[in-house]
Image 1 (cartoon, protein in one colour):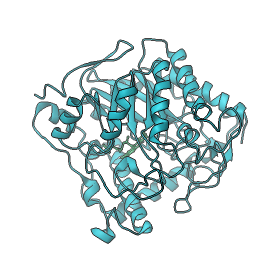
Image 2 (cartoon, protein in one colour; image 1 turned 90 degrees about the vertical axis):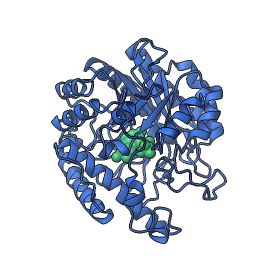
Image 3 (cartoon, rainbow, N blue to C red; image 1 turned 180 degrees about the vertical axis):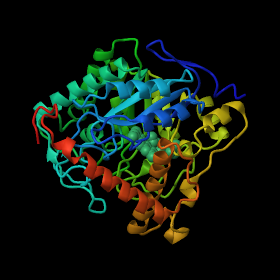
Image 4 (spheres, rainbow, N blue to C red; image 1 turned 90 degrees about the horizontal axis):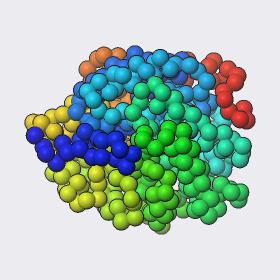
Length: 436
Ligand SMILES: Cc1cc2nc3c(=O)[nH]c(=O)nc-3n(C[C@H](O)[C@H](O)[C@H](O)COP(=O)(O)O)c2cc1C
């Protein structure tokens, strides 16, 4: 038994996490043609609930059916589906763990097979393999509407049995893109100074807290930095954390990067002056940043990204800079890795990110060639997405899935799913204040 990882953590709202391991949010891609949860979510989360983590955070649930992170997202946008959410929540809490719904708006990072009209603070497109259309800048009315939706979706989560919520303020999606001066070029009350850029996030968190009351866990996921020249910097992050101190956040999850700088997976990243960083941490990518955040944060911290060994997890908790360890990719193939860690039967997670690559060196994930890095990243993303689809269908993971095959399977799944949801996306009304 691992007594450190098994210890409980009491959150400011009064709820207690049963241990220090959390399944990080991971987009499932399992929704139906009307973006509702399905029996595949039930199957996957029952398995994860039995897998040992004290906290499971869902993949990003969208507040706007028109602009999704991918076509299999669950959205809560005037589409019913509450019974399916209840079934998902019941299965996902079966072992007595917490299950929090991550709530998001995809913003500019919504691919062409989901929408030809992404939304963003300013019309700055994502430069990535031609997969994203140039976004339209949202109006002030739309921003106010979206803040209301973050709150109402949180309320639906609470009413359907999810035991907490997380507001997604990281990885370049809508709230995160408002924080970044690179993507937010507005000159109204939502852009310019950091105070203005952070207003959308802070008002959304306040609205969520007001909707769910003081005793219900509310978390935020935030970038330690975008690792992008001209983007949201670590200094900005520290100031935003100070502001978040006043909004009643129970757990701050720290990550980093966006689609253009895939720091969240320990891959390519620029430093804030635009140079590609030479050091690549093999484990616990964001712990150095967590130490600085710890000095200003009043709430407990969860750090996600690269944790694979018991030793690194102990070191992180012992340092006092991290209260909860977030685990992502290992749980796509080894759903009970957390349980085995707690019981002391394994010390290390598998690292498929090291082997699902076109080759080594020049052909690998850290290749000097942009195109090769992009293909490897797509292969890894495909690998993990396909595993979650398999688990949702009740199949075992395919540990032998290769890079190119993962890309092929994933692209064909995504494009087919994109076609399936078109009719529903066009149905009027989405609850949007200003229909696109
Ligand atoms: C399949 C997959 C889906 C993901 N989807 C989300 C998501 O919906 N929301 C989110 O905040 N992060 C998402 N992430 C990022 C993870 O939460 C985590 O930050 C990242 O994988 C690094 O942790 P790891 O090294 O333990 O995998 C996803 C990661 C993977 C592998």
